[in-house]
Amino acid sequence: MDTFQPSFDSWLNAPAHQHWLAAEGLRLLTFAKASKLPEGFGNLDEKGHLAPDAHAETMNTARMMHSFAMAHIQGLPGFAELVDHGVRALSGPLRDAEHGGWFAVAGHRDDNTGKAAYLHAFVALAASSAVVAKRPGAQALLDEAIRVIDAHFWSEEEGAMRESFARDWSGEEAYRGANSNMHATEAFLALADVTDDHRWLVRAQRIVERVIHGHAGANDYLVVEHFDRDWQPLREYNHDNPADGFRPYGTTPGHGFEWARLLLHLEAARVRAGMLTPGWLATDAQKLFDNNCRHGWNIDGAPGIVYTLDWDNRAVVRHRLHWTHCEASAAASALLKRTGDEQYETWYRLFWEFCDSHFIDRCDGSWHHELDPLNRPSADIWAGKPDLYHAWQAVLIPRLPLAPSMATALGQLSQSVPV
Image 1 (tube, rainbow, N blue to C red):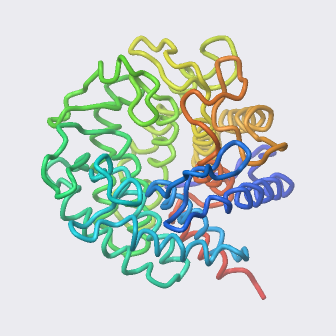
Image 2: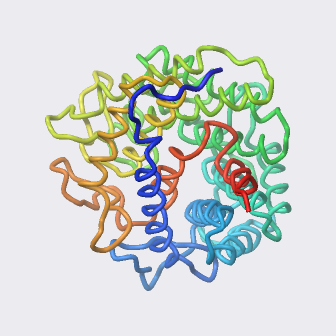
């Protein structure tokens, strides 16, 4: 696999742009520190405050811990204790000490007893980053996360993740989701680097081959999100709840961009490991990006990428979500590095100009997480500003190689700086 230095003036090579990305990252990190709660990390509102009844959640705790670990790895002061706080939370109040695995929310509640693959993928990712950051307790947490994934979620027969279970690991949900398997792919790339075990790259490719090369490839490279237990598409899933934050109806362009980037990371990781690497990983990534740009950007006459499309590629939920544009920008940078094609420079700049004009909140901090169809700040799907992970990674990915995974790459860069 080759990576290319663009023959034109690319923002990726511009020192001022690199400094801008770093400064924006520091601004995001500073805002997110306020999410700390006794039992983990919670959701911040649009002003950066925790609600009086805020509670710790596994998703935000894992994402914050992963993000703060990458800050600490870079040598940024003030984040080590926050990583340690996340390790303690995921090893304590957010963990099910009786049955193993992790709850969605701290505290035993009747509506909080299920075990979801989506959350467990983030726990594994966060633990792997904390291991790279050399934080106490991180290795034990990672070992437990791997044990739970191996014991309950990974299906060797399917080459993919099972979706969810009851608290005691009974009652498996008769559903398979692209979203949880996408974040498992992300986690597996990190696990391969931290454990030096290539089985995680084998698993990642099996997921990608099923979800993207198979199902998305048969759907014009627009990601099919929902399946039954036998991996038959559920095209009408959540038709009556199309704006669901995790399982929306139809196709989701933001996930098309996210998958495109992950395919390039997987390709680079397998090449780096000396493994046989199919050429379709790069071509599928290009098709995902191109087709989701074509059908997602400016589709309703206004700039921005819509949240969802129906099966005729018509906009369903026209809100613009910040994470979608973060992933579009990151995918454009990855494709630019991989191909050197100037069209990805054009998209990269376009996405950042849109984010700068519409999402970045220089008044109250962080980013607006959502815009309405007229590109005004909204809270119809996601209230407040709880998400550091997407925007923080969007300012890191253009500064890093396609492999190894982000925390490991940052660790290697910190060791190579001359003194």
